Length: 339
Ligand code: KG4
Ligand code: ZN
Image 1 (cartoon, rainbow, N blue to C red):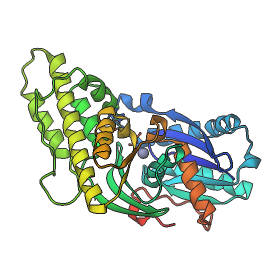
Image 2: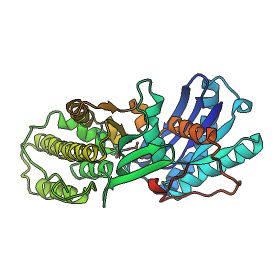
Image 3: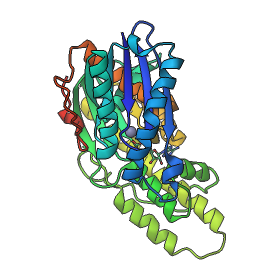
Image 4: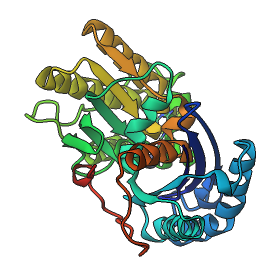
């Protein structure tokens, strides 16, 4: 079976082809970072317009790279939510129309489920059930992935997502968008413990997160620094922010492992690119005698491969859209996914 995956939920157009016989996936991506950079964040209308421009050529390019034509496609998965309404509609309309013309099944995929299942694309992969930490620009979730289509959200952010906290702090201290990689780079030359930032919500029961207070704390510290040695201050603030975030996420993961008795932890989403976070969770799982999984970088950020694979899992189980109306769900919660 060859399944085409279409991802247009935010600022990346992603297309993938998953082949269930060879278990291989081919994918292509175009990023809109250059378009949104000057605004310091994603502009929804510009995102939709760029998806319209890029999607068709990207599908052609991906099929070519997968050595197949449209006639070889057995089904289509597309991201139906959560995400930006206009951006989602581009992918959904395209996928539904193409599925209709090819007479193949089509299924709307939850973007967060796809991020979590991306770990299954690796050779060394987890088996369900497992615990997942999903950290991206828009989401921060601790999830018990029980089986395909069945996810319990154990904790989530009450305000800003982790990636958003990196991005907004980066903007504050004069770094480029997206801020996460910039902070990570700079943190390497920052002095440990020059500043100590709060680890939000670790003294409260439960597994929820909150990052907006941390962002405000950093603003206050930054605004009160004198102008001498701005470069070193910037690096020290980056280091303290990264340390606070990594510590907080690691503490919550340890608690979630204890309460669920899971021995496998999957890290997913764009922030999974952060090396300090990966190292800290690797150490945690070693201490717990468990296993840590994190998909390669290109499967952590938004991509079409994870949507193609998740589409395959659902279509194989006979779970497909039952009509051709175009529906998207900008606020689709992971707990509401069905199998
Ligand atoms: O999953 P993703 O590509 O897009 C969303 O669905 O949000 O995640 C993008 C987020 C951005 O906030 C970016 O700053 C963050 O991931 N990010 C990082 C790193 N690389 C990307 N955050 C911290 N450290 C990194 N190395
Ligand atoms: Zn994402």
